[in-house]
Image (cartoon, rainbow, N blue to C red; front, side, top):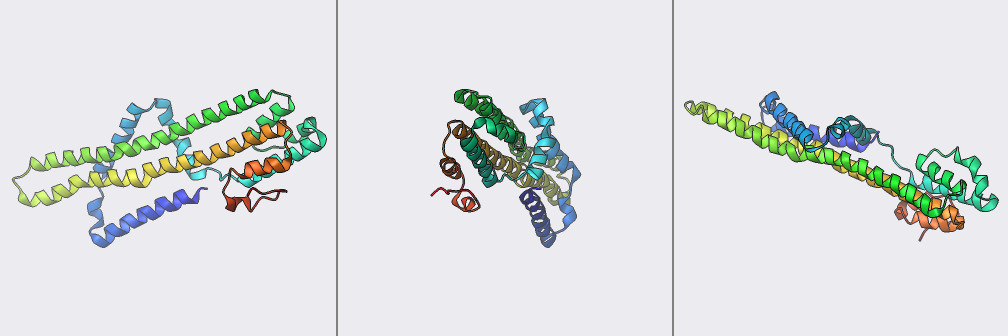
Length: 259
């Protein structure tokens, strides 16, 4: 589980409601109609803006933000370097026995093409195409939450306008103006809160996770092509270690580390 997502959401909710509790009456901030205007309106607008199928995939997209696996770059490098060592000692055909043991599907696909004797340019093209479509799928998920975050404050303002119109129709009772104004502003509060605590941070989280996966796959493409070209394992490790921060390189157990 991605603890950062859970901790951020829970701590944000606790902080906001603690502030409300210390500053005034909790129940005055709870209004179902305002919540429905903001969330329902944002979802409706998102259906208009984004293809129906992409919106329906929100459950899978959300699951990735909470349960996306953390990528171990060092482990990926170690697997690639081990394959390079075996290929250098025994030849590419000897690697065929190891391919089925590879857990990373992207790396497995690349090494299968290497063992089959596929041309380097074709391997690069196939793997880059898969990477390109991965980026496209990820961008759709990010766009979904960005769109929800963009429309939530707008519908919060729309809800406030609805409340103000209703209030202005009852100016005969001065005592009702204050409470009416407060209720009208709740939708603006909900819109800003939901957009900036849930939707927009989720979009950023998905973008960061996507960047990590893209980096992993770029490393794999570089490593697969290096193995096919017969580069020395130490050279391959240096190349791949340059993809990651110096702090992460310390965990590498190979023969060489990048400077």
